[in-house]
Image (cartoon, rainbow, N blue to C red; front, side, top):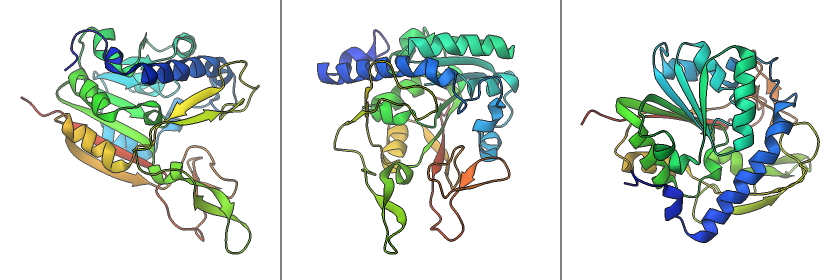
Length: 288
């Protein structure tokens, strides 16, 4: 069960090198993201990044021990602390953790941040357990093995604790822009929905936010994970699924023809097909 040592040691050397490249890429992104309008550090309400249904599913957070896995700059993590949770943020990027601590200090909230690969979290967190583990919105694509990931999360949960995952829907990640029948730009399947082909290498001089180009380490890697793979991984780790939702809005406009919602998120227009853009899964660790 990988209770001792670091689980990353159990990956083959090629996969370990890919994860090292991903880490370096996120280290390069961190200062650009911290200064970006996209994240709006010190300007945007941290709660902006959450759909209303997320707070409904999470319930009362006061006094709960909450781990935000793959937390990046901690812009979302702050919202949990503001709602009364005792929060730990964990991320693979040393630079992201440096910025997350600064941002938490500026916001006047008490959050503990730990730098570690999620696969090594049991060791990095010294066997501590949590009532809630929150993760998502762009995290899973950087993980090569979801069964190992789910095993780690199950070990980090107390009995009756739960994982709450909110992630970009594989339909969204599979879609790209291409010519449609009326010769205008439309959506077409451009990338894998399902897992199984291994990592896709991406080499981009810019990150997804505004700001300058990446100075170095422009290469990263992403794995496709279908919804069935995610649910099966959680079940295989002994967790019980209690919620599975599909959501038709995003906190940023993926395509220029998206329209703003009253909450400042973005949806496809009514004359376009209604598609899932995010999904949410809650999984509980039952008492032994």
